[in-house]
Length: 131
Picture 1: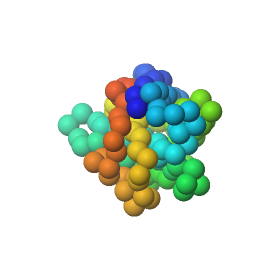
Picture 2 (picture 1 turned 90 degrees about the vertical axis):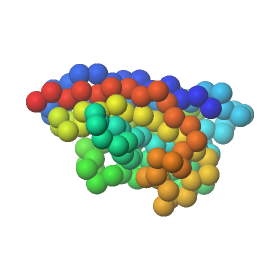
Picture 3 (picture 1 turned 180 degrees about the horizontal axis):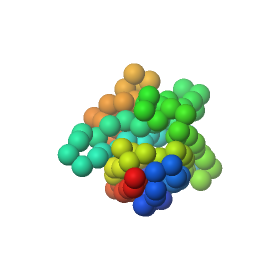
Picture 4 (picture 1 turned 30 degrees about the vertical axis):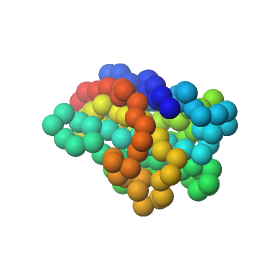
């Protein structure tokens, strides 16, 4: 599985960006829905941290958010297009980071926030929020 993230850029505080991540080289058509798709971020000098997840169809496709993005970020997925998106509103300077998408087929809900639980990672896209 290959993940390609896009949509990062420079935005002023209070602005919005939409990140997208497209999966390719899936084992067979229609399997994207079986993956938990998540976004993580890593700021300079900090560890990679969980942002949001879209659970697999097995777990209802429901979203999970880290507290610091609740009410500001929305994760969504289009299983027909093998794409997961992250709509980021009301951006703050502390949201500045490289954002990574990640995928895994075997996660349980309690593992969503664990970096080490994911088998597949995209290359990252830089989001810079100016004050």
